[in-house]
Length: 454
Image (cartoon, rainbow, N blue to C red):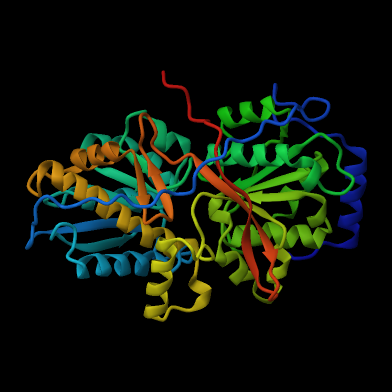
């Protein structure tokens, strides 16, 4: 990554910014003259405490496999971190130590996909061929969830997905893909609503009333997940201009100077990052090098606000201070929450290093307890011999909202296939000099940008 620009380059972009007027993304997405009346978001409750579900029968001697697929090797292996593996295993060890799920002992099988689509499909085919076949799998790749969305319906295997592109979650409307976090277009719309409602307080010095948003995202399905027709229509309703998407190579050495220049030249005073990890660092570092970090409001999808960004920056972590992120779960600092307390105790007991306190561990660790609750309901409904993917999904629907140890929620109420609420947090320098993610807007209901059912 290039962390600096030549003086000539900086002068050039300054002249261009002075000379050029904003260019709308596409008709009719042009902003109105001045911001429209603020649309306040509806407050939402924090994640619910887990349900107390008693087992009606005991199935000692039985066992069940939790199937996971993710990139464990290859160029993107560091994205999920070691917490992806250890969190699941740690939670399962604790569940089993407490008697399993109604006596059923759990184990985990995780296969490496390198986040390559062909390997994602190959691993899924291996899993579905097992006897008995999985009730559910977990995936971590938007391209994979899109590719598997029809297969899991046919096979009646629930895909608990962290890659939540709209197409994978709501097409088909009654599919078997369930998002662990809000869909990307809902997150983007929620961030736009936050910016719009708080523009007077957060806008850069010298910015007017008009909001122009530039989105920079990975050159894949994930990167394009924010700017759907529905989220762009929501932006238009707020009088916000959204510029054409700038694609960012999925490469730790990528230079994003050109992409950011394009957004700034076309009037962006808000930049939204639909990426994560080293790609967030590239944008932050480049904006600082260009001298424009304080001249834009910088935000990110939930995966972009994580400990790994601070770890990569290292001694330069204060450079991240000020950027915002959509945050649909609790964080390690929410120590009044029992689920977070439990994760902290387990994390400490295992002796993991402090810098590994990422969302990866907290999310996957908590998820296993939510899954255990779903299995308990399913076992009460049909017994161990009646378990299958369809019954697992029915149990989820019976519960409606599934609390993952009170840290986050899955939501399959009615036609929902993903949760629909989140906080907004900001990276801030704390009194002790450290950087962490501080709540600036508590949980609200996100705008609904799912595609209309045909």
